[in-house]
Figure 1: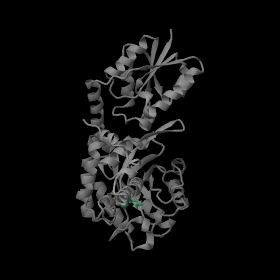
Figure 2: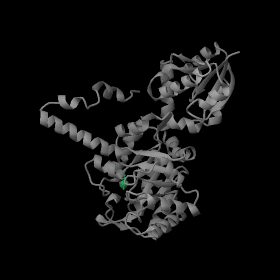
Figure 3: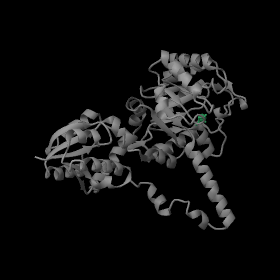
Figure 4: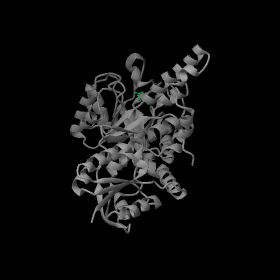
Length: 431
Ligand code: SPV
Ligand code: MG
């Protein structure tokens, strides 16, 4: 009896999957691999049902003789231990980033004469509806809000990228790359005050009011499912911050980060080049505690951002504040720096981790951008935020297009640098 292997990364088994199994069973005994949560979040959508349930669903399919766990996106371990005669998959893996998985499977099977069978993917109304329903479920506020804490358990380091509109939200949501045989994607969306303000043509001084910031969140939540980390600036008055916490929770935001500054807030990357005032430990702790008291769900996180290194107040001050803020109820600590060298950030993380092994640490490596995610993770960092790169990449591209049209009195010259019209009109899915 030949062995036929297929791997599932789905929450709902629909007609398309059953068709693959039916076809597979014609070639031999069918073994299904269910992709682990850790592997699923790397390149596909976040599982909306527990792993055990996904295993159970696979076991219930009549033609399946065995269900195993596939722990990696790539099939290497499974192929080595199972040595299937056939690997069956929907032909949707013939294009896009999934093609690299297929190429690797093909290479492995060739070493012993195994074969791939590509089954035409079923795209009917029922399958489309099922797909849309899973997406909708992931976008529900209850689910999205809880997802950051779940992701923190599944990822060695959670990667957030800035979004300030529906379109940039879609980029964070949908970008998947294959690199060096690995597939990867972003885990969360950072709603930056700098980029949200910049997109509105305003300075980053808490001028864009909360109602307007919430509109940006609305635009993003309408088209995405990933967890949102909101840049709450100073949090404003404590009496106002408690309302902000409730509103963010209601919208399905997972976390707010507030910084320990008072008065006119200026962007941290100015450092002491402009006047910025740090809050007292006591007052900021009160704000954190009030926010925690106002919070209604266990999912939401209030993360305290320490500006001591930005304002050159020293490492000792930064660490004292970190421990005080955690004691006041902060669910995480963000430490910021505008140095090119990551040394002070790493010293902070190492020292903090000597006494606090659990509280999530967040960094924003805009200036110290040479450091890699795995190095940060080794120093105990849990969340890395790429805070402004989409805005900074789009602005020069748009300016260049405007200048080219003005110079040439037509759009021909810039056209080759632009996204084809056909692509832009198909970028957005219609329901
Ligand atoms: C933001 O993205 O708005 C931030 C990070 O607060 S920074 O600009 O580095 O202060
Ligand atoms: Mg900000």
